[in-house]
Length: 277
Image (cartoon, helix red, strand yellow):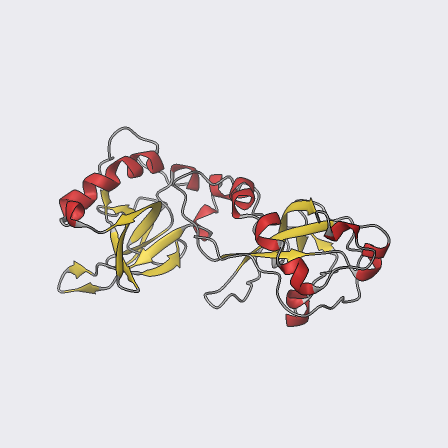
């Protein structure tokens, strides 16, 4: 799942480029904590093929009654708008995410016009997506996020799991990692509660199978691909996260590739660039 979008930090405006007319698809290199935390973000756009930390996936307008204020509203008032204006559904559309595409390592940031631009009439809210570490720190990238989940670089955004291998058996749960890192299973964005009707591995596989076929875009599970559901326990509640994995790996495959015993890198999603014979 995506990290919740926040408009955090202090109610400050930093010097830089005009903030009143942002555009969808622009990329920005934001390098300081002050820039990340500011209500307005004035860094000039950079080419998305160059190093950047943020990409604008949506531009919207501050709604009434705040838009009618002559002086820019405070940080708390603008923060309250973030989840509604910079929504996850719009981001998934920008990424070209399908129903079964699980993602990880993404964060949302929202930026309002500077005080000066607000007083000149600007009301545009800029919604940015960022690659982020587990603690929320943005990471520099040269990837263009638009439509990325249908392209060859989609593994960088896809959610995979790395399980522990002990006595020839993989652990029930695993660490969340992007699919570009070594992993043992790939999430297919279908979760359900672990209850008596799915207490056995066979029952869990049967429940996950239709989602796996939808994810792979096939009518029957291909040879060499298996179901590998993850069992996750959070605050005592146990859920099953449907996942798929190669049943075996061949050195001739270009993606996913074997990186160490029991782990692979890459994605099984057909649009992600996997080649199967």
